[in-house]
Every structure is written in structure tokens, then in C-alpha cells.
Length: 272
Image (cartoon, rainbow, N blue to C red):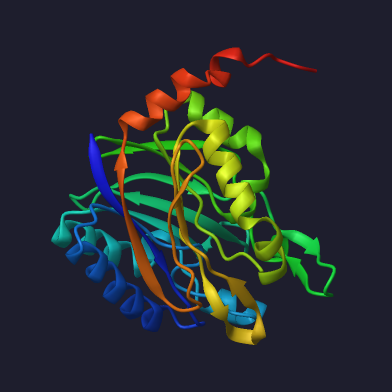
């Protein structure tokens, strides 16, 4: 089975409605190019600097305007959409989930995943991030199926935890999505090598859609959205520091060929 797939790169601000209109334009352009699987970045609908703004621009899942929006868009275009994440889904304890969604081409949500690993770090350049101040971590690994595709879901900082991807591979994932809003210093140092390593280790295609540019509060993201083969080859990369998309054809037979050539999944040992 072969499928044309696209990663979307965006530069979002703090207002959900504005960002929805912007990402819709790019998704439609990718669909015109023939993409049948489209992946959007982490924080697709909102990046806000202040805690009060994050909370104000957030919703309970059943009330979130992005979900019927993407459901309708997937159905209209007849495409599978991985909504990279909404970091604006309210939990029951005054925190937010950073939640990824898999929409089938009929518009139905087939899977959803809450980011498991919180980005709580102090970078060498002085930048500080405390994702857990506003977000609640998930506790379930999710491999979803839609339109004949087996898609493993993850979000950004998860990429640094290889056991998650080994589990997705063992669960049968052919494609793994790693939507992100990577910082510039860590992106320059680690982004490509981490993505290629996760593809090689899992023997799966990796689709990494990313935020790019300067956002609310002056935070900067790295961009460089990529599609990577199970052999670790970068098939497509967005190198410009602007919004857009990149397409590549995925031959899903390459997944089994890669795993047969280097059968590390079969050779795993439980170590203590």
C-alpha cells in the first residue's frame, strides 16, 4: 500500500479562531497536492505565553471548537488527519491536557493520546520551561487505526523516550507521528538525529510536523518539519522558517522490509 502524506508547519498565536483559519488554508493546499494523510504540529490551535491566557483559550473536550472543525474538514476533503495536539483541553482538576487526535476520512475520531512526558527544563541559554505548571501528563500509549493505516501517536518531548516508540512498533504502528514545538537550541542540536533514531529503532515512518518562528511572549520554535523513512532517510524537510507543508509518498511495504532486515523488535530482551 502506498499513500501520499504531508506534514504541516505553522506559526500560531494565542487566538484559536485565527489559527484554525490559517491551518485550514495549508491543509487544503496539501490535499490539492494529493495528500491523503495530513499531520499538523503540536499546539495546532494556540500558543500563549501567560497562564491566564492559556486557561482563557481552553475548553472541555466536548466544547472545543477545533474538534468539529477538523472532523468536518477531514470528511469534506476525504483525508486522514492527525491533529498534532491541542494544548487547550481542560482536565477535571484545573489543568490542561496536551492531546493529539486521529481523524478518519469520515470525520470520526479514531484515537486520542495525551502527551506523557512534560517538558520541565532549564536550557543553557537561560530559557525555562515548566509544562507541568499548566498541563497534566497522560498515562497511556496509543496506537490508532484509521483508513487502513496503523498510526502511533506521540507529542514533542516524548521523542526523547525511546521505549515509547519501541512499544508502538511492537503494537504494529506503520507510521509514528511526532508533532512538536521544539525550541531553537534543542532543535539545532537534536531534532533530526532524534527523529531519525526513532524511525530506525521502530522500523516505521516518522511524520514530524512542527511549529516555527516567534510566538506570543517571544518564544521561538525550530520548525524543520520532516517525513522520515523506516530506514532513517529524510524523505522531505521544510527548511524555510515559515508556514507551509511538505509531501512524500509512503510505501508501507517498507515497514515490513525494514523490520525483516534488522529484526531488533524480535530480539528485545527484558533487562532489569
